[in-house]
Amino acid sequence: MGRFTLRKILYLYCISSIVFILWLLNYHMSIRENDDWEERIATLNQRLAKKQTQLDESRQLIINYEEKLHKCRMLKPYPKHFNSSLPTIYLITPTYDRIEQRAELTRLYYTLLHVPNIHWILVEDSDRKTDKVRRFLANCQIPYTHLNVATPEQLKLKSSDPNWLKPRGVLQRNAGLTWIRSSLDPQTNRGVVYFADDDNTYSVELFEEMRSTKKVSVWPVGMVGGLRYESPICDRNLVTGWEVYFKPDRPFPIDMAGFAVNLQLFFDHPSAWFSNNVQRGYQESTILKLLDVTMADLEPRAEKCTKILVWHTRTEKYKIKNEAKLKLKRGKGTNPNIEI
Ligand code: UGA
Ligand code: MN
Image 1: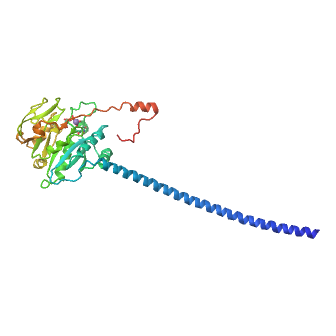
Image 2: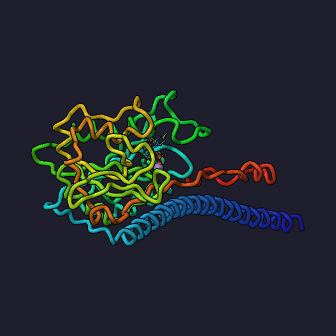
């Protein structure tokens, strides 16, 4: 009986040892396997994350290309080919930061897209070039030059001032002239200079009228000087007088939008500049006098000054009157990151 029990115990011991060893082995294996799986899952997750970023990047790339494609389609009407037989129109546009700015520039740009051989000199009234205009120009499909110069504080128009109190765009037009005189070659560059404010409305036809300017070409301007239009009075191909009410005795009673000058004249008269120290309404007369222009030099355009091809439009000042109220009502105004 004793022997039998001992043997039994021995068997039991052996079996349980084997079971234990098997269990230990199995346990060990499963831990390793688990570790393996965890490692594998971690690597797979990493790979997934990487692929996700790649996918996001590709998605962004597609969006960018779609945007570019969209722009190309939008710009289709612009005849991109440069016609070397045509003189270039150098358009000097002063501009300044305000809520209406991008709307004005967009409208003007879309007009210019229809004009071949044009070079847009956009001059910001500011200490430095703003990101807003930089971004705007980056998307422009016409030749341009981006400049800036700030009007000194004491000469700057305040928003409460009447708009005629101080001259506008003077230093900016001069900066444009400096660029022209220093970057163009009077021997090889043929062209016409036009001072185009950013808020006027220009017919595409106007640019073809001015392109052939020998010295100074002139035409009527709509909605200016308190009249329906102001205009040179023409007798055949000569200007004999002026249809104006405001200061008719000025040497050249004409709005900035009403004349263009042959490029050569600015090289021939290197000290012709605009000035902040002239009487109201005398900017145009000042520059034309300094360019030695006489009445006999004026070349009537736009069907002997009978067609209005440019309008002295002025955009109504926009009042952001509900932004503060919205903030009060719901804790925040409209998204400041959206550029208007
Ligand atoms: C009229 C004439 O059409 C302008 O050519 C002339 O410069 C101006 O009067 C003047 O007497 O100085 P107006 O419509 O009254 O123009 O002037 P704005 O359109 O307000 O300004 C003319 C240009 O100067 C615009 O291109 C405008 O963007 C720019 N400007 C205006 C500045 O660069 N800085 C300013 O602070 C204000
Ligand atoms: Mn204006």
